Length: 318
Image 1 (cartoon, rainbow, N blue to C red):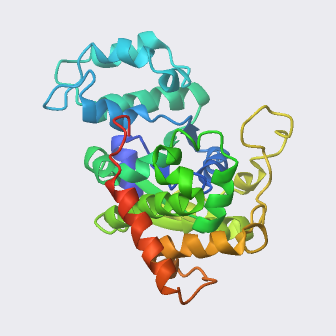
Image 2 (cartoon, rainbow, N blue to C red):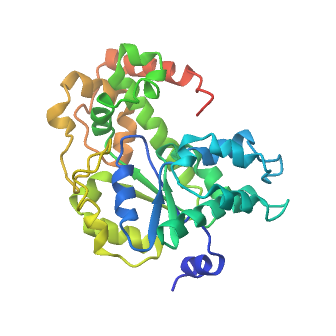
């Protein structure tokens, strides 16, 4: 048994794993696979974990929780989706005035795990890819799986995304060129995650490709289980069974390659503009480019779009 698994058994530490990635990169698919594992439960997306800590909502400057955190969490719709007994959550705070925020959140995850009958509890919140260093500082033993997808296919997914206008659509350049703006949005998320990942212990951070996951799901799930120090279970591949009629904004498909394919579904001029602003990351990730050489006007266009994107201040709720 590895040191990681021994440490987990000794401390009972949750959160066990954070699944992160640029929006529309396959985090939901990986979450469902992990949640189908007999030992792992995955919570609904939280989003409040980093926000409460950074804004010190019910948290002191020293990182200790106060009784205020319970009613504030009850106002958060994402927290309520956990379906926890709020009296039990309140008792976490009553354990003592010195309860740290990490220990409080760990207690919340433990409560969720007990409710669904599983020992290990993780979270899938894509936007946490922007806060990996913070997550690691709060839970040094938590595992982080960063899923990466070809940004051009991410754009095809964003194009029909209901949340596009209030996320990537926040940028002024979206009105002029949504494809290039989505490219910069994708590059920003992936870049932040990879940059932070390089500073984390390798036994705590793992990158996987969406394309590999849908092409060879059994092999990839086995590798992820190895990283997490849990036995592989074939039930991970059956996450969709019996779910065909379950209401969801994400249909319960089995792993399916080619649901979106930029080569056949993305106009050439969009591909060129996308690669003008994010081609360097495509190269770094080993994805094939259609335009190896850009014309001087297209290079200038890419530079201008990057400056506009970087100049836009982030919304306060990010």
